[in-house]
Image (cartoon, rainbow, N blue to C red; front, side, top):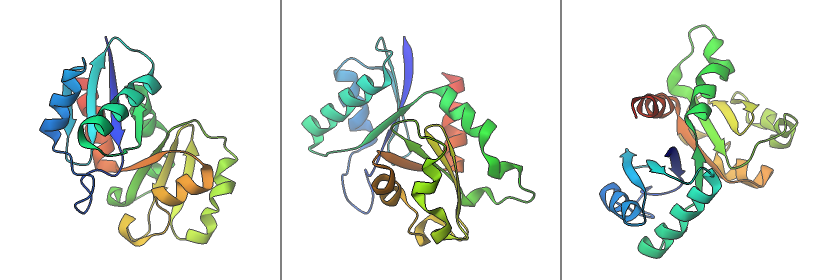
Amino acid sequence: MTTHLALLRGINVSGHNMIKMEALKTTLEAIGFQNVVTYIQSGNVFVDTEEENASKVGFQIKQEIFKVFGHEVPIVVISSADLEACLKNNPFLKEKDIDIKKLYVAFISTALQSTSINDLKISQFKPDEASIDGSRIFIKYAVGAGKTRFDQKYIEKKLNVTATIRNWNTVTQLLKMYQER
């Protein structure tokens, strides 16, 4: 049995793509996922399955959400190793007096090249900062996520990928939940 964490993008935001977590849990259990656990309303869901391929799990969840709820929801599926790498590799955590409320991680559907940072043209968003690590982009917002144009839509457009962003609090809580499973 393999545990996967599916990060759903764009649900329950400003009244759009509304999905109650209990209904999502029931829906996923009905198609054979086990030990389904959700975390907060923004679409973080753990599932256990015999399927080891994360892309197949994401596709299955995406199809079922569309079938049951009628929403086209992009999904990035990550492992506990992905979350552990966040803690280990986030360059902004090394900064003295870092405000973790300004730290975010964009989880990307495919691994990026280190040169992809050039494609993002992050310099035009100064003082926001970003660093690429495989299929993650570590972000430090100067003011906050709600006051920048360097967001998931921008990342997706520039890199031609699916992306979903989580704040640092959520990342650490999801890792804790993974470890408790």
